[in-house]
Length: 520
Image (tube, rainbow, N blue to C red; front, side):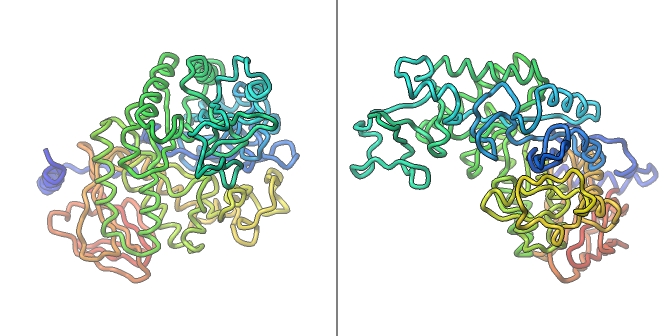
C-alpha cells in the first residue's frame, strides 16, 4: 500500500469514527523507545565540574543526570573519555581506561548504573581509525622494526612510489596531502589520515582486528556501555577500498553482538547519502549530515517547500539498504558551528530548527547546550565551550577548561533561569521532546507532505497504524493563513503550538516563526 493511499484511509477513517474519541497525543504514556528516542551528546570536559579543578568530569555529569531525564532524553553519547594527550581526546593512548582528568573506571561504572536507573542509555565514542602517536603501541612500533606492534600501523619506504606526489614526499599536518609522515632518522614513513599525531591502525592485520574486538568487548561486558559511536567510520581503509570498509563494519557488528545482541552502533560517515547507504549493512544507525544541513538552509532561507521531499528521498534510499536502519538526525555537532551561530543568533530561527528536527522523522541527537542557545564557531575549541548551569557568581560546577569566546554570561541565559522561564528555548525543546516521546506518530511514523501554496510553510502528516498527526511550521517572518483541505478537518485537537498559532474550521493561523501540531 502506498503512503498516499495509507494517508487517505487514515483521513477517511477519521471522518466516519467521530463517535469514538481518540486520545490526545499528550495524554498517552511515553511510547518512544531508545534508540528511537532523543540522544544527548556531551563533551565531558565542558559539561560539569565536580571537584573544582576547572575541568568537567564524570562525577559532575552523574550529578546532572536528573537534568537530562527532565529534559526527556533517553540516551547520552559521550565524546572520547580515554587517556589522551589532547584536549579533544580523539588520539587515544590507552583503550582500556578513563582519562584521569575525567575520573576513574569506577566513576564511569557508577555513571552508567545511575543513567540506567533513569532509563538513559550510554554510548561512548570509540576511536578505531587511529591511535595517538603517543600510544605505547606506536612508540614501540617506531622504535623496533621487529616489534609485534609494527604491523598495527601502516608503513612504507620513503622511495615507494605510493608515497610520492609530483616527485616529492609531502609530510606534516596542515599540508599532509598524501598523508604519509616522516620518522626522525628513518627511511620509513607511516600513514595517517588525520595528521601526524594520529597514525592509522592497520586493519589488514588480524592481530589488530582481534585487539579491536577485545576493546569493544571490554567496554560492554566489563563496564556496561550500551553501544558505541564510531568515529571516522568511512576511513578504516583508504577511500579506494570502500567495500572493505563496508565489510569491516559487518564483521565488527557480528562480533559485538556476541556480547550484546542489542548493541547500538552509530557511525560517522560524513558524506552524501549515496556514499552513506552501503555502510548500513554493518552500521544500522548513521548520522544524517544531509538533513542537518537541509534544516539549517530551510530556516535561514525561509523556504521549506522541498524539505519533506528531500527527507523522504534519503529515507527511502536508506530503507532499501536496511529496512531497520536508525536515522540519526541532528542539527549540528562538535565538528560544526553551533546551531545558534548558524542562524545568526536569531532565537526564533533556533526554535524553528528545533521544531523541525523534533517533528520530522528520525532519531534526534542534541548537542550539549543546544537547548540553551549556546553559541560557537570554529576553530573547534570554541564550539566546545563550557555549559552554563547558572549565573557566573552562583555556578559552582561550570567548567573552566577554556575561556569562552561565544557562549558567555552576556550572550547565553543559563540553564537555571531558562528552566524557570516558560517561553525559553530550553522549555521549547523540553515541550517538543515530551510531545515526541509521547507520540507513536512522531517517534516512529512515516511522513507525507501537505502542499499549502506557501514555500515558507513546512506542512506534513506523520503516521503509524495507531496514530497520525498534522504538523505545520511557518519559517517566515510574516503570518500565514492556511486553508486545510476538507479531508484534513479531522485534525482539530491542538497538541503543541507557540506564538498563538491556531486552527478553526480548517483555517490555520500561523504567526511568524510559529509551529502547530494537531491530532484527530
